[in-house]
Length: 113
Length: 118
Image (cartoon, rainbow over all chains, first blue to last red; front, side, top):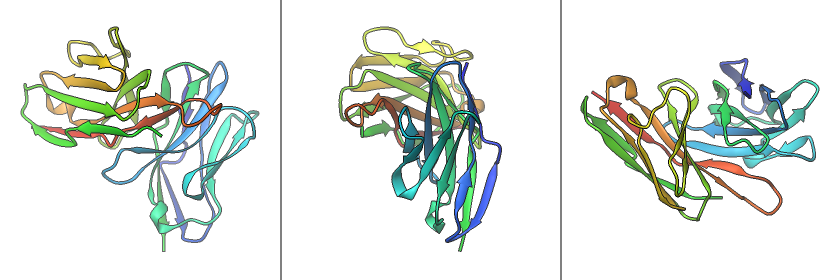
């Protein structure tokens, strides 16, 4: 079965600095990879996904992620962090067309002014 | 993207009672999913709600505890039966929708139903 690891529970960055939230995955077939954000007291919002094509995927709010097949990683990045980016971020994976989506444990991003 | 509405958004429930959560989507979708997010934790898939057939439950979840209905392509309900404090969670409805041509499927989430069992 597919699985996702988010090795960092917490990431702290200063506003204006670049940010990276890490994610590694394990699947037996083709990985469909996703990032979601959860703001306090809200549901999950879709940020971006990789299905096929370019390894660098651009998404909402200036976020992007790079698919690295050899390292089985899909790290989320943003060149310049905003305080409003502070939230809980989830990486998720599906094994190709498999319905089952597995989520990582989540990483809490805090951007300080 | 699909717009998903869940009711109730929040509730405080008495131990031993049951509560039904409704999920309405603004477009017809094939796949609907119910997830649970316990306090401070990640999301766990409860079941996949199939239109016209019984839901498919994940390991650790059973129909008697979490009965699901899917009467049409835009609506589903999840009931949390005989609740205990351990059922205090966020319950999230999600759907698989096509955001655009040739871009593959994306799963979208509702705002969740925040249940506290006392």
